[in-house]
Image (cartoon, rainbow, N blue to C red; front, side):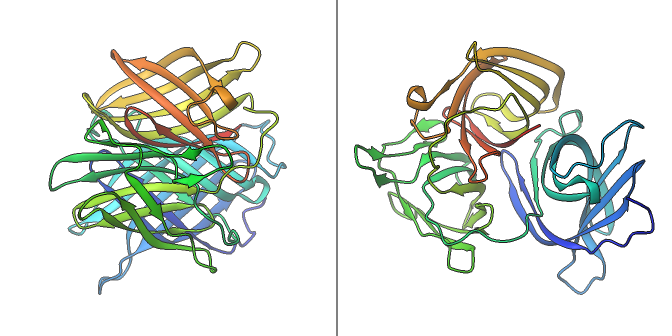
Amino acid sequence: MDNYIQFASETGTLYRTSMMDSDAYRHLNIVINQCNKRYLSITGEKMDAGNNAGPNLRILIERNWPASFDLTRRHAVLPMKATIEKKENGAWTGRKMRGFVEFRDLSVCRIRQAAFVPSEDSSVLEPPLWILNVSPGQRQFWTPRLVILTAYRSLVNEPLSVVGPVPFMSSSSFYYPNVMINGVVQKRDILRGVTPPDFEGNLSSTLWLKGKDQEFKILGEGDTGLFEMRSGHTKGVGVFLPFPRPFYRYPKKSYRFALSGSLLVDGPFAFEGQFSFDTEGQAVLLKGRINEAGSVVPDFQIQVPYRKGEDSYFRIPGEIDFGFSFNHRRISLVLFPDPNRKTYWIGSLNQNILGIADPN
């Protein structure tokens, strides 16, 4: 890991989702500026599509390594900070973020994915979740069986949340997701279906909800299942997952996580930190930082019981459920496993939340 080594650039996608807005910045140019035993510097830039030269968005991930830190390992999930800047009207504005980075090869500073929220910035009243994907390769053709989606209908001022199985029949029962519109749980059969990725690994399809004008166009990536929904006055970000293979031992002891969205009464909400599971006591300890509409809680901590397997809400293989209270509001979380069998995607049964967790 020396300064003079030249690293080839990669292409990534940066997803952004908050209570009332969402975006996907594709074709980010990811460059490793510096990668040695003392210092890490990685930049991702989205170039302006118009006539103006130069980038209009960039993310900077930097870290000074401790003297005794082991940089020879390949896979690693580490707490990190980032700065995300946007160019508006010719001027750059930036925000400091906290979260985690998953390295697919730490020895050469190669990122697989990262997640950040402005958990310490009280000036951010609508804290977003940023998810950076630099994962190479593509999954084979697969059928979406699970979905976590948070969206917002600006015309009618309504949040939309879909969490759970895409409707399909198993050998023993019919699976339905939990769908909320403006905080009201809908009938079980409101989600009618979704088309799968194409054979080139692209998610370019339609999600159907029961009712008039309820067809939503989505565009995403088959390698991660992440997608952006942008249809009329409705915008959102979500993730599709194939049905998991059976799990025998889970969860792992500890996960870094970041999530964002909104609480139905209190508004914008973001949370990042660490889940620590006690598998013998069937309890999980949540520790981290919360930003609720600009009100920052720097040291939130709570321990609660969790459920999994046949005791979980949807009884999906690998699923983990738990809930906690914050400011007298109940937040019920559902975690679905990624096909890599390490990452978990986070949704909620009673709030509008999207998040991601990686074992550390």
